[in-house]
Each structure stands twice: as C-alpha cells, then as structure tokens.
Length: 439
Ligand code: ATP
Ligand code: MG
Image 1 (tube, rainbow, N blue to C red):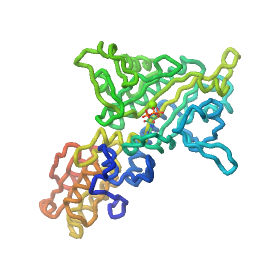
Image 2: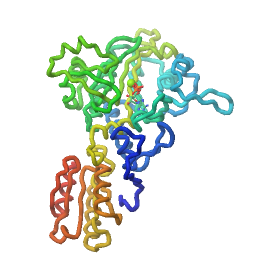
Image 3: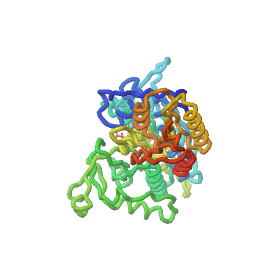
C-alpha cells in the first residue's frame, strides 16, 4: 500500500478524553473514530488489525473442530422471554420495536437464539457433540463505556456454543476450548492467564476467564507467577487433554471477584503475583440452564429424552485490539506483534522526487510485496521527522529508510520497532532480512 493512496488520519495531539495508552494510540494512529459513546468507526488501519485477530481466533476454533456459522445481530425477544432473560438482562440490553410493534433486541450474546435453533433440528444423541461458533457484533448498553474499544457498547465477539449428551462429554468440549484459548492468545503475542471464574447456580469449577496482565486492566488479579510464563500447549491429543488443563488450573489464579486470601497465602511467597488484568475471554459450562427452559432435548442411548448439556465460550475480538496495544507499546506508539501487524514493514522515502531514491523505494516496495510482506510505502512529501514519528506511532515491526546519502554508499537503514535497533545494509540484504522475519 502506498501511503499517498491510503486513508491514515494520524493525530499529533493526544485527545483529552483518552486516558490509557491503547485508546490514545488507536485514536492518534487513525485506527478508530468514536461515532457516539462506545460505538466506533473502524478506519482502514484498525479494521486491518481487527480482521487479522479475527482470523487467528477463527483458525484456532477450526483447529479444535468448532464449526463457523453466523447468527444475526437483531434477535426476537421471544427466545429471551422463554428463558426468562428478557427481564433479567436489565438496562444493558438495547430493546427495539419494529413497525408492527414486535419486540426485538440487538443481541448482547446468543445462548437463547442458538438453543432455539438447535432444538429445531437435533433430535438424537447420535448427532452430538456439536460445537458451533460465530464472530458477530454485539451490543451492550454499558453504564460506563470507556477505554476506547476495550469497553465499548458495540463490540465484536467470537462466541461458541457446545451441545453434548452428558456433563462428561461437555467437559471434553470445555477442555478443547480451554486449549484453543491458550493457543489463540499465544499467537496474538499475549500471555493470557486462565482464572477461575464464578459458575453461578451450576457450581463446580467449569468457568474460566482469560486475562492478560496490564497496569490499566479493570480487574485486580492474584495468581501463581508460573502461570504467566507457561508456553502455549499447541495440539493436544484427546488422551492428554485433561492433564494439560489440570496443569493450568491447579495453580492459584483468581480475579478479585473470586479471590480467597487464605488460599492465595498457600502459594509460596516468591511466587505470589498481584497485578491488574484485562479480561479477553470467558468460557462457561452451564449444563441444562437453557435447554431445560427451552425444552431442547435429544433422545439418549436409553431411548429417553435428555436435556442437552451446553457451554458457551466468548472472546472479545475488538477488545483484543486494545489489549494487544496495552501489552505492546512505548512512549512513541504501538509495537505490533508480527501476527497481527496491519502491514509487515514500512518503507520511508526520505526524498520523494529524487530519481534514484524513488527508484530504490519502488524496487524495495515491489520485492517486499512479492514476498508477501504487505509493506506500507511512505511516498508522501513530508519532512523526515514527521515520517519517522508517524511510522513509530503506527508500530509496524520493521522500517526501511531510504535516503540519498545512504544510497550513494549502497545502503539503507533497517529499524526493528520493538528494540529500536538500527542496521545499515544493502537494499537486497534489507529485503532478505525482513522476509526472514516472517517465515
Ligand atoms: P466484563 O466483565 O469485562 O464486562 P463480561 O464478563 O460481561 O465482560 P462476557 O459476557 O464474558 O463479558 O463476554 C465475553 C467477552 O467479550 C469478554 O471476555 C470480553 O473480552 C468481551 N467483552 C465483554 N463486554 C465487552 C465490552 N463492553 N466491550 C468490548 N468487549 C467486551
Ligand atoms: Mg466475562
């Protein structure tokens, strides 16, 4: 992409209403524009990152055998009345009436709708298990939308729903999602810690929130230090599933809501970590809560009807854009992990109009494009300082700077955004260096 052809409205000043780094940088880097409280326009740069995160989430869902579908944003109130949630949900639900005075709502989540869908088709345990997901916009009329996309009113969520014949089978489904979450967040460059969450009336230990540690997080967290640095499990065989989940759930990790000081005190003192965290995912087993209310049963091996056992599994896709920035930035701007960077590298032309420099830039641009790096070429006629600041702000992992002086000596500058390290090398070596970083 040539910058002269792109839409990147960067701001010099930090907007006064943005108090945390991710919100400030997303506004300054021209990633989003607030349209009304908690509702954002995703500008091209932000949209690109959002889509990359979405794709990683999708690939990890597909890897565990979850099947993608798409439910609408607008739901009928009828499903919610059946489960009793229409009244229970409260003012966070955006309620709408259509021209025929029918009650609709903008979905804050989809358990009720998908349970209705399920019961329309599935009659037998032979058609189980099912693991279905969609990635769709949600609306919750939050009391205090804030921190940009981190607590929006309209936000993008991946939500999966599992259907099983009994609690044991449901546990397998839960464990698979648990592993998928660890792998998803690791690919996003994040250290997310699963923390025991409230299961409500169901009881048991089958609910976990996944939090990334960040000073600006809204939750206070208490956890065993070793959990933070455990690497992603990768593909886990059916035989190892429970063991792998056990190693992650046996160590203490709770948010303030579930914290028990005397339990935490049993963690060796040098392993006790108290920090703040951002909830990026939440998985939940709720048994027959909805299937019972909606009469969603299947015939079991015993020939009798069984309410189907369910779980739901959310990931805050749009919240993750902010979360990744909270985890990766410096005073100059964003530092994207390679997996979700909007462009692989930036090319800075220090003297637009100089024939040799233009030609060298074009050549590098073409070669990097052919190598699949998807570079952003700053071909605008701005001052060098402005170009450097803009490139640092938008946080691409590598920058190549081409100017007349270096070019005379056959070299360009390559900067690694995360470390600030600069190297001089030939244009050919620069292309090879950057290409190698993405294999
Ligand atoms: P929170 O406690 O942060 O309000 P929640 O527990 O109500 O979140 P869930 O119903 O568990 O949220 O939704 C699944 C995921 O969706 C959350 O883990 C979070 O990442 C994301 N999410 C929830 N609410 C918002 C929001 N207002 N803005 C952006 N993302 C959100
Ligand atoms: Mg939650």
